[in-house]
Structure formats: structure tokens, C-alpha cells
Image (cartoon, rainbow, N blue to C red; front, top):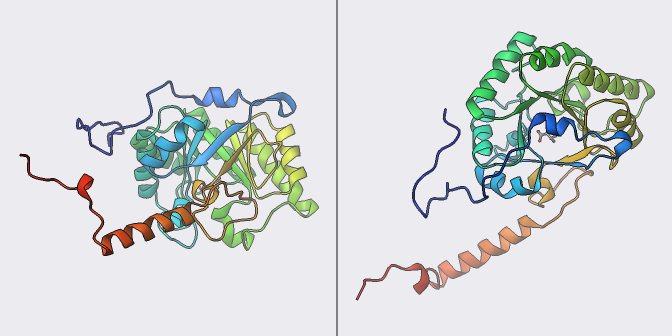
Length: 290
Ligand code: KIV
């Protein structure tokens, strides 16, 4: 599947709006790890569509095509039903809509856990069909051999530890992790194992703040927090959450806008204009030329 195409018409919505620029690379992201939190924090957001990618790209270092698209785009009850087909289609759209950010694509549940070889086949498909620079997978110690297998074969891997949504059935919910000593130790061991296996970055989700700080201080690669700590090497949120598109969001989300309210107001005005026949007006109507 081609990942770059242009349509030569001035009105095509597919025309990219941002000016092409040099794309960041995985090694450049890796190098942003600063000693004791001194590096410039990495800015990461999710994107699933070309237009959102175009809007986010100039402001971000990393665009994540998260399997959260299962809930956000498809209204699924969890990330578990998300397929490789979905990730490839949305991943290619985000690559087409971005010039600057490193695009990372989530490996969906069931596409990588069985063996490193199975993971390689899935990751190779994602990389070749989308043009993305890296994949992300969930898990710790048990996934370390897979992270090493992929990394050694030219596929950069971002890890994901702590609250790992694909394991919601095993975890029993989406609550914060790392409250008990045993769980604290397990998550720290998971992060260390994934980093040592060659992950270029790790997402730490939904964990107690001191644990997030310890992981950030101890592993060699950047740690990107979500519900973790301001002292992580970067932050990620689900874009639709931070834009205020949902009524309910996890506690760790800060809403930076009220897009749901603004969309609702705009559509209310549209509906009123249609019903009162004030839309379309002269400016939106093709009239015969004199
Ligand atoms: O799927 C996703 O959006 C994610 C982020 C929440 C890190 O994994």
C-alpha cells in the first residue's frame, strides 16, 4: 500500500497543509534522555486520522497510533478487539499526515504475544504497510525477548508498562498500579527488562508517582508518562481526551479544551440555519454567470 500520494487539485482535502520538514528519528528520540530529568521533555499524543496528524505534527515529537482507537474511533468496549488491519489503515493515514514527528504504531492484542517470530511478522507488516518508524507493545519481563528480537532485526520498539490496557482482564480493571510492594517491584523489573532488551522508549501508564520517578531515574531510555509523573522524560495523552471530546476521562487527563461543547454549539447553529433556510447563503451558492 502506498503511504504517500498527492491529489493535484487545489480543493482536495487530502492536500497536506504543514510545510514538509525533516522528520525526527528514533535515535534522536532516544538521545533526549537527560540525566536526572534534565532533557527537554518529549511531547507525544495519539493520532488516528490524517487531519488530526496534520494538526498535531508541528507541536509533537511522537505521534502514537494507539490501539485506544478501538474505543475512540470504533466505540469498542476495550482495546482487545482491535485488529492489525485497523492499525495498518490508521497508521498509514497518520504517516501521510505528518512530516516531523516519529510515528509509532501499537501492536494490537494477539498479534505479538505468542512468540518473537509472530511479533516480527506482525511488526514487519505494520512497518511496510504504513511507513511508520516504530511499533509499541505492552508487557514487561515476559516480552523482553520479543523486544530484543525485533530491535536486533531493525524494528524499533517502544515498551509499555504499568497499567497495560490489553491485560485489563488479568488486571481486573483500569485502576492505578504499583500500590503494593510486590506490584511496585514487578513494574520496576518490567521496565528494566524492556529497557535492557533494547526498547528505545517506554510508556509508563497509570502508576504511582514515586514509582514513575524511580523508573525514569533507573532506565537508560526515555520514559513517557501517562498518569505517571511530571518528572518522566515526556508525556502522552489520548488527544480526544485532552481536547475534551468525552464526558468521562481518567483522573490523569487534563482537558485543555471543551471540543465537545464547541462542536455541539457549531452543529446547533448549523441545524438552525438549515431549518430557517439561511444556509446555504449567497457565498455558498453557485449562481449563473452574467
Ligand atoms: O493506545 C493508546 O492510546 C496508548 C496510550 C494511552 C499510551 O497506549
